[in-house]
Structure formats: C-alpha cells, structure tokens
Amino acid sequence: MPEFDMIVCIVNNGHGSKTLKIAKNYGIKGGTIFFGTGTVRNKLLEFLDLNDVKKEIVLMVASHETAMEAAQMINKGMSFHKPNHGIAFVLPIRNMFGSKTYGNITCSEDGRVTDSMYNAIFTVVDRGRGEDVVEASKAAGARGATIIHARGSGIHETEMLFAMQIEPEKDVVLILAKTDICAEIISSIRAKLDIDSPGAGIVFSLCVSETYGLY
Image (cartoon, helix red, strand yellow):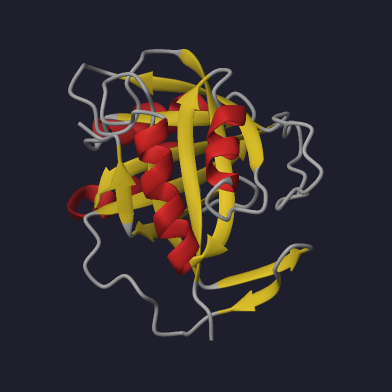
C-alpha cells in the first residue's frame, strides 16, 4: 500500500505561490495556503525566525517518495538554509478522506516514524485565545509558534487538496518542538487553557519525519 506524507511549509507573506510552483515541478498535484502570524522569543530559532510577522502556511500531500523529493527541492529553491527564509517539515499521514486528488488514504497502523526528533503540536481554540496557547507553550520551553486565524484562504488554484472550512471564530496554533519537551508543552497548554473542559478546545501532536530551515 502506498505511503503518503504531508509537507508543511511556513514562509513569509507572499511566498506561498512560489513554494507551490516549485512543488508542482516535482510531482505535487496541489495544495492550500493559509495565512497566519508568527511569534518567537529570541534569535535562536527552532520554529519561526521573525517576531509577529505575517506568514503563509502551505499544506501539500503526496506519496512518500514524491513528498521527500519535493521537500528537498523546496528547501533548495526557497533557500530555507538561510535565516528568515522559512521552514518546512514532513508529516506521515495515516488516514485521509475526502481528497479529490488522491481519494481515501488508509495507511498501516504501525506508523512510519519511530525515532522522531521533532513533534508538531496543533491546538484549536476560540478566536483570541491563540496568544494564551503561545504563552503556555513558551513557559514550557517552546521557541515560537504560528497562529492560523481561521479566515485563511487558499490561492486561486484549479486543484485544491484541502477544501475544508474552519469556523471563523477559531485560532489554530501550530508549534514545532523537540520530542523530549512535547509532553511538557501539551501539559502546560492543557492547564492554562483548561482544554479538558467541554468546548475549551483540542490539542494533538504528530511526529515529524523531516525538517528544513531550523536553527
């Protein structure tokens, strides 16, 4: 059964379209761009590299082989090895449903990442509480985050992988953290945001198989 990955690129405002163009040259069939705000606390970056700036988050799905090649070419084409140019990481996909391009995807229950150095932590909360999530994560050692305001929209592409809608009153906070502090960050978010209360939000983490642009 084919394995699939999601490529996540976080780039400066206006660079999302260029990222997609590079990806399509290496077999990526489409993607979605969201708009967000990046935050960091110092220049030693593990996630984003500018303070309170507009960011574009590009999501793309492809077979494992295609995704790995495309991620490397995006890294090269977007110069992620240089400070302030952005980051990219690859997430293994276990299940995906509703994609017009790939159909339904159900992968092995065994998973493919057994020794991941980084985790991607996603938190969905009511609009305006994203900053509280960032504060809680930094208190537990996170270096930065991206807040995706749910009104984000994709560019005008003929093929869109994610035709999903998120309610406008939600913030989605994306944090990339080393695996050894992931549990502490999640615990801090749960405590500060009272996540376990009904309607307070959700938080989940995914293993990351490849990263580019981290310092």
